[in-house]
Length: 160
Image (cartoon, rainbow, N blue to C red):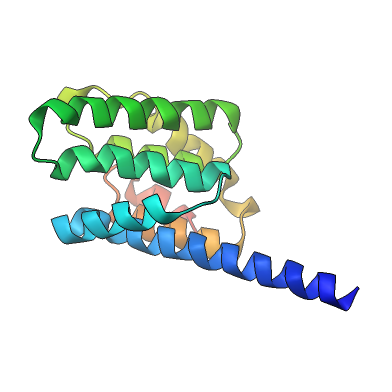
């Protein structure tokens, strides 16, 4: 029994580490092309199939359009990543981290792309469900909100 518990604890620890690495890398991805490449690399190496991991992978695909030199592939990267992300949110409508990923992608993608439909909905969902989240996820949301253009000063103050 102790052996099974040890394996389970180890598995959970490694899963958390991977998720934390994704979160940390994603938070820095827009700062430079090198950070974007690093995030894409970390996301591609993830073997998890949970919705949040797949959400980060979809965001990485969208970000790949930003750094690719092949102009014909940019539209394809955005379309594939956005479709995947939309399906993940649709199938997991109560997952606040997926909503945060989609909000951050839509907030940072050029307006001309036209992928901005969920900003208000995601912001409202995040604000309404913030208090139900783990401490680690609350801290992650707060860090995002501080630099976000979508969250107002009042919104940011409500995230305690």
